Image (tube, rainbow, N blue to C red; front, side, top):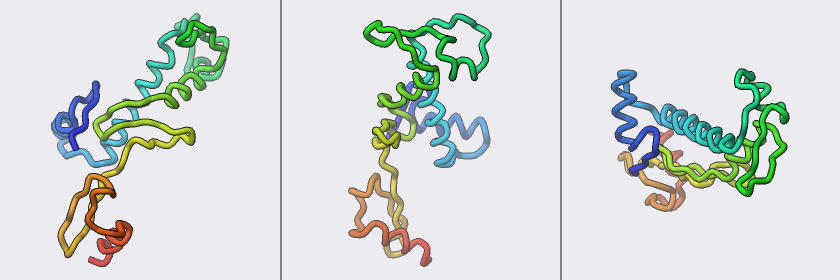
Length: 151
């Protein structure tokens, strides 16, 4: 699984940089947190691309929740009257982004539907890594998880 993004580079480069910075290899949660922050940063950048900020010293609450604090237009040049929070939310709704842990893309229920998790199975006492459930050798993948707990 060779993933990459524009900020961290490849997953191998991310692992190397993280390890040199913190003295340990990144856990899945570290990589997931990094990808989440990257996804949010891209969404924020995209959300405010076509906006004018009248008060450069405004606080986050004003930026996010006061619809009069910014003046924005949509991609067609039509004025947008929502809040900064709504702009970010809308940006996330249409986001389709490659990250160091794979693709991020949200459905209408705001769930990341593009990222299929890697699966680890225990088969006859041996660890077997599958890219997705579709590539696992176990016919009933949830039973493979229970085999782990029996060891």
